[in-house]
Length: 299
Image 1: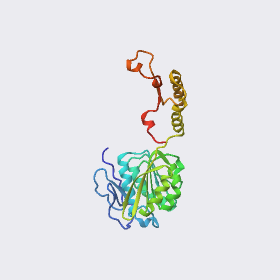
Image 2 (image 1 turned 45 degrees about the horizontal axis):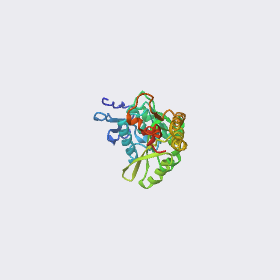
Image 3 (image 1 turned 180 degrees about the vertical axis):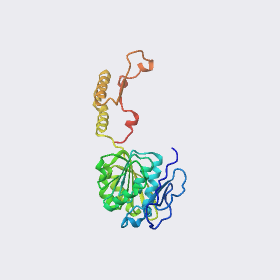
Image 4 (image 1 turned 120 degrees about the horizontal axis):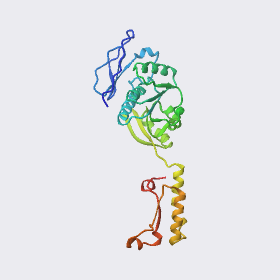
């Protein structure tokens, strides 16, 4: 993949206070929309931003807070490893995290926020990029699109993160990754417990100053059909314990076929056999077993 484009904006504003370019992640730079784009290296994103005074009040997520920088760095790192099909930014604020996802080539990006002022400000900031892919900005709950997202980032306070946990979990695909921030290390144990109860697997914790970021992944669970399959297979031996010889072999094969075609049932062939095979006991002439990869998984 070649160098990613920089986004530029002509000076269309008056003379608000210009802010010097600043890095909010190793490969992400913000600069004033009233100034010329800075010179950056290959693969580094440079985003123009409107002066904060035009927002008519404080809007979280301008890159000045440690949690925004934690999320920007983690998000950009993960997008460099694997490009998801859909990204959700919960509590989008200025929209900078959603803009990073879009700039890295994610085709479907959503930013949610309960503050109408934040959504309006995010829309203005996103428009600066001149990108053909539109970021969907809304006040809907995270699961409004169903289990749609490969990657979700939520940079809000502990209380909303706890309240939204079930809805965030429902929005995740089976292989999805979740990044949470907006809280201190003292609040980490309670948040970990909340999300682990929703079958999310804790992966790692990162810190910047007095703030923390947690990374979770969707834990793979056996489906109901797989649980029934493993239960029936575990009963296979006991169900046949009262039989012996050829009758036991035929019964085992019928049980295997009834449980699932995934189960491999082997029996002695009808053709020529080796002396070693002929010396096997009849009790071993038929076996009922799961493939090793499935049988080794916890239920």
